[in-house]
Amino acid sequence: MTDGLVEYYNLPKSLVRIVQRGESKIGNGYFRFGTETCYGQCADLNLASTLNGSLADALPGASSQNGTVSLPFDLAQVADNLRNERYVRRSIFNSTTAAVYYMVRPLLPVAVRKHLQKTLLMNWDKLPFPHWPVDFTVDNLFERAMLLALGSSGLDRIPFVWFWPEGASSCAIMTHDVETTAGRDFCSSLMDIDNRFGIKASFQVVPERRYDVPASYIDEFRGRGFEVNVQDLNHDGRLFRERKEFLARVPKINAYGRQWGARGFRSAILYRRQEWFDSLEFSYDMSVPNVAHLDPQRGGCCTVMPYFVGDVLELPVTATQDYSLFHILNDYSIDLWKRQIGLIMERHGLISFIVHPDYVIGSRARHAYEELLAYLSQLRAEQNIWMPTPGDVDHWWRQRAQMRLVADGDCWHIEGSGKERARIAYASEENGRLVLSLQEANRELDTPVRK
Image (cartoon, rainbow, N blue to C red; front, side):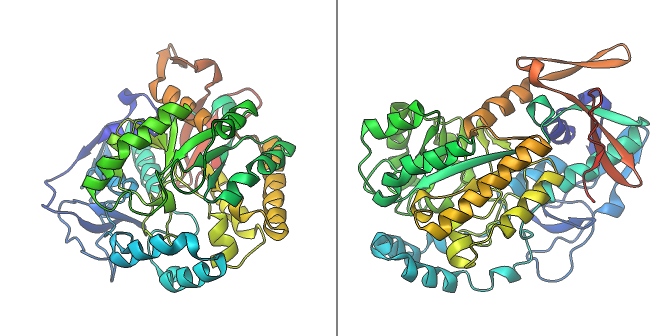
């Protein structure tokens, strides 16, 4: 119970104690904790099998006293259920219709594909959960637990290791999934565009069938300071349909990763089964959306922070993909992206983009992308956003997970590799809200987590 909160904030375990009160009923179901939708087991509540209708509230069953927070459910289990999408019923991605569609997909022009996809995604904006355009359910659950921990501890504030190096306010990464020969051939030009704004991205390359992948193509990314990762095997939409087929393909995927020196993986069309990730020999994955209303596989991990799935670090996709923005929503402005960026920055989270070289070849889409890069560059300069490559985020988050806060008299200091880049922060309560502030001379965040 306590470990989930300790891992999320990386705080001293000795300062908080969370226990589960009562025995949970057998079987998982929906309930709520205040305003937050939960999925899992909970004592003393009638759990719902669907999100239709009202949900029983577990908050009245929580207590905070004598140094202990008592909850009627396992906080870590519920957070993992959401992050690993155990609340989702597998949908069309495992159907015969999907198999036929992805067989002929390479032959279909975008104009045809987008109409078929709009039909498939009809009423996406009516889905009650996760919450569009960014879902913070997991983050809100840990925020509520931190407030309860503050109330039970008698402390004015609880220290933790800040989320990002050098006290950065948030983190943003740019990723490019290469789908076609035309996209592959545009990659050099796209690197030129990224370089103009001082941004280094990762390129996810399909190893087989879609296009030729000469060694010189892979070498160019690294020679210019960009990253290359493996994208699926052949982008046919079948990787996660059946376990037997997945296990037959994954050795080849892992081999391409070793051949290219790739540390990251992304599945085609963001199809995924997190319970199978342990077969992937990659350090990080980028296949899980925060909220997947505009994706063929519905669901979402409900957090804007990286998290571990076993030994694999998940870097969730937290912003709408360019294809969905341009061709499903028919929007060539960056207004939605700016809205998502603003919401995620309020929570100091990871802002993660997928922009395909295939879909920014045209001048209208390319202009929108350049406008996005200019906006991100402005935020980097004015609001201290960290803009690394995904591999840099993976390296940092693993270092942070191994760091420890150690008491030194009345003060704290950080121990562990990378500590020189880390910053101590404090969580405190102000008018019922959680406030985070950095311990840094003349540099206080004092930012409410939820406004």
